[in-house]
Amino acid sequence: MTETTTEGNDLIDSVRSFAARHLADGALARAHDPSYPWEIARLLADQGLMGLTISADDGGQGAPLADAVAVIQEVAQHCPKSADVLQAGNFGAIRTFAEFGTELQKKKYLPDLLAGRALLSLAMSEPEAGSAATELKSTATEDGDDVLLNGAKIWGTHSVDATLFLVYVRFGPGTRNIGSVLVERDTPGLTLGTPSTYMSGETWAPLHFDNCRVPKENILLGPGGFKKQMSGFNVERIGNASRALALGRLAFNIAREHLNTREQFGRPLSEFQGLQWKFAEVAVALDAADALLDRAVRNAAAGLPSAYETSVAKFAANDAGFRAANEAMQAMGALGYSTETLVEYCMRRTRGWMIAGGSTEMLKNRIAEEIFGRRFSQRAA
Image 1: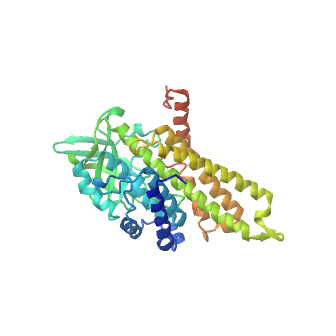
Image 2: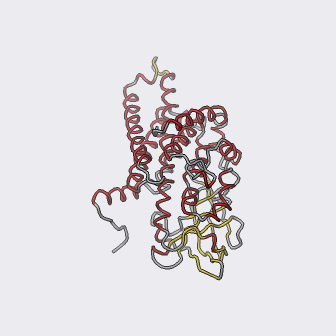
Image 3: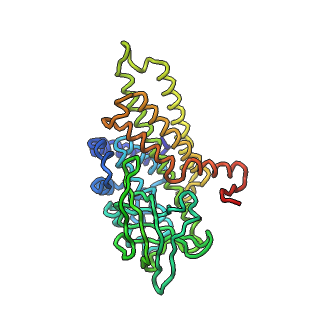
């Protein structure tokens, strides 16, 4: 687990006790409920666990990134769905918003977001712009004191339940004109399409903008803001990596207990060398990924980790987390494959994080660019 300060250790002890008392019961049912757990969001907010790394001046806790990583991993060990709430309240679009929002924007929206009464969803991917985010076509056109938004967004986490959207848009041609706008759910011109379901059980809804009128004061980052937005997105990837590792370990621990107690052919499953070697390899992968995550967190400047170290950490954590959950499910057989334990859920969730927040293939491209000291364009000549 990521190394924390002395104050952080006290925080983790407190979170562990809180999670065991209030989150562990009902964790399995929550995992299979696609709706956003608003009651958990308010409960976590009451514990001061929303906005951990956001400045105290903005209503957050002003804690180091390492503490937030340790908290989300600890909560995930008790209730994976509650860790998703912490992701939304600490590592997701809220972190970019808190970093670059105006005082007026933060005063208007942060109090409810940090209290668990509101939910911010990132609207970045489009039908023709997934990993190639710079290819987005949604536009923002100035019209007096407002901007008119037109376009469509897909795959947004929490888009079904969100009260506010951070929408990536194009103010003009080229990457330099990509920015973002805050759009409230009930804004005229914004409509949500029919919800769809991921393999993990999460739901998402397409967003359609048809001359959606938004005041200019809701522009988060105007032209030239794309690099800033992506630097904030690195924090989202840290949360992704943290949960991938945590759920991998959760499945690993459940399966380890099963192997120590389940007997076949007159002896515990843990005495079979084939299973011993599998779990030894998984333990090494989890520990190695944890060390890389810790490096990215410790070296973060002003709370925003570097693109390279984040890419390395997310790739390692995604790979190790899914491997751990997948091997745990295999080792437990039909029980692991059933919905009677969290193991199959952990497998499905960790698999999804290999796509979300930057696919493992895109991460390898970014890592290679650092290795060779040059950029490799994926566009056709």
